[in-house]
Length: 338
Image (cartoon, rainbow, N blue to C red; front, side, top):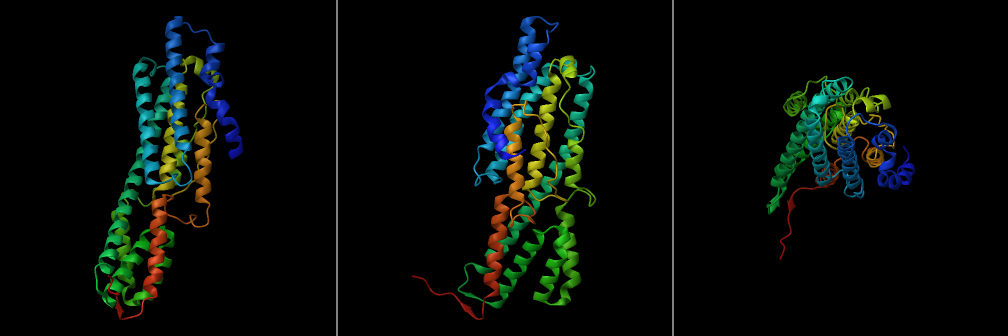
């Protein structure tokens, strides 16, 4: 969806509950329940839709400097947990409807998507562990170059080795052979086999998912057959399936955003998001989706292992440090400061 369309529809969609699917159902359908009970349920479900919209509007209000940072990612997870808790309460209060068709199918599909989401979370956890490994390499570089009155060739070589290990760790596996070739030219060919073995060992420790596992395919499976509820099914479930559909879409988006931000095996951002703007939360969610895709298309981010801005900073400063070390001539003496 073009950004201009999102902006033009944002205010109207968010301010008017009258265009939501649940509101249209209320106008068209006379429930068999008492008026008080019907109104209470509809109010609860529409409040959930409004909550999701408000929280995603808060996320979408972040400027370009805040988007895809660690604080923004933490806020994304907080939004997800908040929405999930409200959804849990709704489902618990309506648990008597869950075993009746077509609600049983909706809830079973949601549970299956949740399991797929857990697989993505496991891979994201591995990506976070890999970032911690990068931090250790940065600490080695600082230790080699800091607090030295005279920096010798040994310290430079140690820092250079850590920088190349860091660079290799931040590359996709398909790019690792090129990085290893560069390292072998820098340090001699006697270490070729040892470097390949150590790199493979590093990846085996970093990734707990199988080598055939794919984040892109998992996201595709998570989003398969995710279509908005048909009007007759909304009537049959008293609108409860709309809440399940909403929670499923929130789950899909959050998993997709995490895969975009954090290193993950076989990352891919091709997941298609197409949802009617009758849903109050659709506009801010689709706006965020478009902004993240635009970030991934930037020239300096196309081959990034993750779109997290802090990762980009590590890559940038590691590259500058590598250029600086390459320019060093021996012996190197630090000037004595005042």
